[in-house]
Image (cartoon, one colour):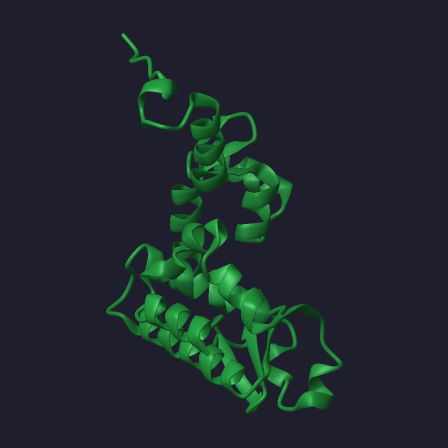
Length: 208
C-alpha cells in the first residue's frame, strides 16, 4: 500500500501549501527548464524519457537531481563538443578579469562547475576554481568595479572593454546585487554555499 504524506505535518511552522511550493521550486524542474539546462530539443527530451534515462514524475515534471546528474555525465563523457568541434567542452575557466575594475563570468561554465561541486564530483578542482572566482568577485568590488555575467559564446574572446561591448551581457552586478544573489534561494539550489570560502566572502563584501 502506498504511503500517504501529510505535508501539513512534515515541518512545524510551514503549512502544506507553502512546503509544496518550496519542494517544487527547489527540487523539481519543468520540461522547458530541463531542455534549457541540458541544451536539448523537445524531441531529444522525449527520446531520453522513452529510453528510461530521465523519469517524468508527472507530465512535464522531473527531478532536479536526476537532471543535474545527467548534466555531469554530458560533461564527463564529452557530449558537449558542439561548442568547439575540434575539442571537448571545458568547464574552466569560468571567470577572468579583463582589468582590475571588470570581472567577467561565463554563465554556462560557472553553473556547470557549481553542479560538479554540489554533487561532489572530482577531487576539489572545481571547488577551488569557484573559490577563486568568489575571491575575484570580492577583489573587483574592492576596486569599485563591476561583475558581468556573459553567455558562453564569445566569453573566451573578450580580452578588454572594447571586446566586451561586442558580446551579449546577461547581467552586470553591483556589489549589493551580487551579495543578494549569493544569499538567494537560487544560489542555494545551484550549490553555491558548498564553495570554499562562501560565507567569508559574503561577510567580507558586507563589511566593505
